[in-house]
Length: 108
Image (tube, rainbow, N blue to C red):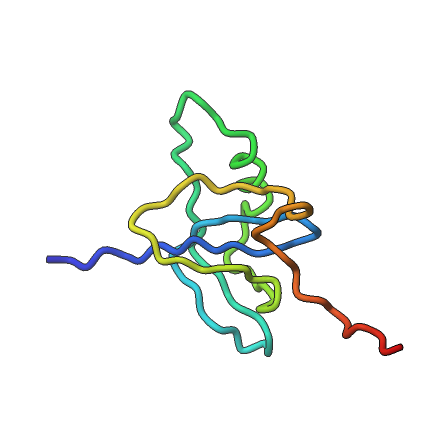
């Protein structure tokens, strides 16, 4: 029996937006501090209903063979049984997502 390929749900912050994408491969990059994402998975194009958020992501990642995401931007990576709907949501005001501070707080 052939082993099913793993599918990963990767959530990361990019320009104050929370990206949730699905891909087949996630691994550390040779570039220090980055993760490589490959094999992006988007819904079937034959669907009658089209999700504008997914369509936006599909356009943004069209032609992208591999994406390098800074490790500090990654919120969570899950191995899932099947892909869901990729989406972009606002990360501001969300109680579940907090960006790691880029600079240390100033001492008084």
